[in-house]
Image (cartoon, rainbow, N blue to C red; front, side, top):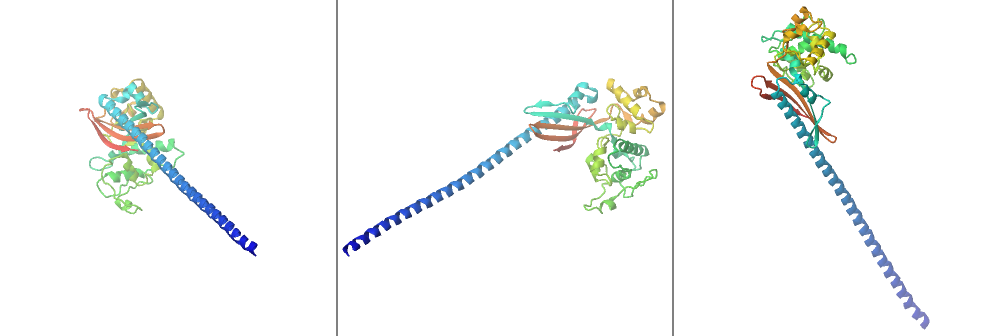
Length: 346
């Protein structure tokens, strides 16, 4: 019995020791799990912080490059303003023609800049389809109709541009609320006043005033974004209506008269490349020019606009980041002062 009694305490001590070891092991395991969990949380936080930091750095770099590109575009516009202000006609200056061609670029600080200049005086002014008394000017209207015909012939892959935009343009610029009716147009010869525009999903009133920007044409009945893009290079809302024969495009020259054919328009352009016309009378000496054609166009063209209007596109690029400025400038030919009529950053 004594032996048995001596063995019981021995077994009890052993069990207690094992329990203590298991408890310590569990505690150590729990601590390890907690430490691992904390490490994982810290890792996630660090990764998140690192990701956010990289986004912030990328945003800062993006902003820096964007500002550099924009400043480059602004510098390009200032170069254009200086060139226009100090030259009577930049389109007769071969050096400037090269500088402001779409293919030419030049360095400005860390950026690359390109500047193109188009003269608004070389386009058809849609603000002048009526006279001072708001009566339709048939000569100007028929020129715009010919331009539409030429565009439809040239751009056969596009939908047909309808004549209806012509009376709609007249209604937008005249002061009355009478719907224009051009009886000499067979189809789509009615314009649109506020009654039409008020029925649109986003209604607005007819301006009954001259266009302030070319982009305002997008508000006209029938003048869709596609049509706008197609006519944009050939129409303007600036100038006295006379077209500079030294800078007009081939299509605009063709639109001057029904008798002006593509071959003669090309000869005019080839001649001015050799030597710009110093007077309208010199156009009469162009090979193929007849008295009838010259008589039809001489009052519509000029070689020295009373005020110069220029559309400038200046694009600055840093790496793959680009910013563009669009501007319309007016040059007073007497004072040489430059006025910014339109300015837009893209």
